[in-house]
Amino acid sequence: MEFIRNLAQLRPRHKNCVATIGNFDGVHLGHQKIIRQLEDRAHTLQLPTTVIIFEPQPQEFFIPHEAPARLTRLREKLLALRRYDVDRVLCLRFTEMFAKFSAQDFIQHILVEGLGVKHLVVGDDFHFGHQRQGNFQTLLEAGQQYNFNVESQHTFIFEKKRVSSTSIRQVLSEGNIEYAATLLGRPFSLCGRVRHGQKLGRTIGFPTANIFLHRHISPLQGVYAVKMHGVANIPVNGVANLGMRPTVNGKQLLLEVHLFNFNQSIYGVDVEVEFVTKLRDEKKFNSFEELKTQIYQDVDKARSIFMS
Image 1 (cartoon, rainbow, N blue to C red):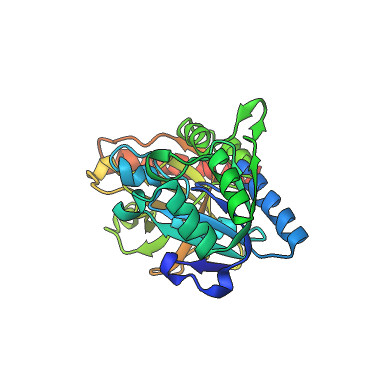
Image 2: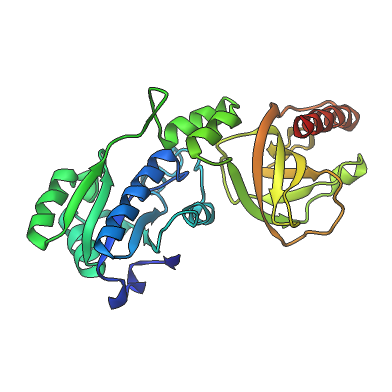
């Protein structure tokens, strides 16, 4: 899968493709249905597939302090898209200049001149361009003018409910990790690099891998049974705390993972942490001794989950 970092990196060889456009936050079942539709059209037309995404996402540009927590940062999104037959991902930098693009500018500069799109698949609620002036009808009319086909994909319904990034965020906030995995079509996970921390866990017998997530907010917080990928040939089981660490007056969102039966140095390693089950909410303890007692209970509970 080729990653095209911005519009300026488009080359003539990127022209003539089947494309789709969206945030693809989470790459959930609804997104996967669109990608499968894209793959089918690409196979029929014998053309490469291109997924067009935005960075930052539009809400993060327009209302940065109110935008919801992402399910997937850019790296996590690309890892998820690699699971499918996606040939290229074009990342459009959402800047002040780009925000002023009219719907016609978007069509002309990106779809026609940039990509030479031959077939376009979009969600049924897709809007684009300055003040969201463009919609599916706009694309249909442009397709007639510039000779490309357009089709919409209806909202994906699972158990009589619409699958969306918003609905998955809600499920995660409620602690239902298992159901979130069902809606995502894979376990929910977060990626980051293991960094040196305060090493306070060592003082109470529970050394942790400290992973800075480069997020101000997270779609979930609490204590979880987890699996860590990227440090051994197979995933390593463990228990994790994701939050602000109120017992030690933490100021930064941090993912701390205590791995079972593992004592290798993994500083600087990029890892993926898969969330299996929520054990409890994060809380502030009156002392390190209370925290230590609780961690023993968390570890026992997580081990029993992996043994069941």
